[in-house]
Image 1 (cartoon, one colour):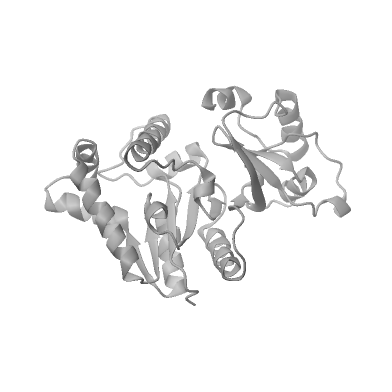
Image 2: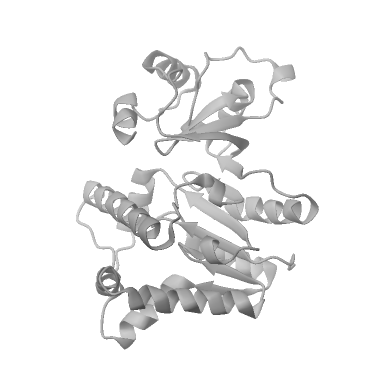
Length: 286
């Protein structure tokens, strides 16, 4: 079922990129390469754990240079691949670039449930705190070494929220994105988001079937999504129990919109029986 383009998938620990990349490579009938596996092989040859090598690489640029050259060589080969890597989107210019996101506590719970020599935590809070710290450290490192910010969503073609979506649902969205990329040029990332994690900037809409087709547009700030348009459709998606809803990215900003108020968030929580993140925590994130 190969569609011509390579697909590169990135995401923080617990986002599901390993599971999704394995399934995608199988469905497309192409080879999968995990840069994480290559990294672990390099660590083993040096008698180190992956975590030890990761810490050492912060002081020794030759390690990242070696991994980077491997990725450049893979790109130059022209082979269609599925690549599981946190930075492949920077090297594989012609690939479909997929970014997986997950609610931090859900990601921490996943990692806590599969302890390894690299990630081994005593509590959920310890796991969440460390994962967030590692992600931010990695962001700063990429900024310093490559001049790119991995948190900017416009680096990617497809954003998938794996908080509640199954691996098969994520796989289907990637296949859909691949088909679309064969037909039309992308004008921005297609966002497949958990409707229960999108903050409203308007009052709870009265349900009207005729209005529910309005496209959803979202803003992104402080690692959260905010509905700019399409509240009717967003409400319908929550009511129907969808784990993913498609939206287009309207803007990326530093701070949350003023229209996201505690009263408005609580009204949506009550109307739809959901629990959006607390605004206090949201303010701290910004």
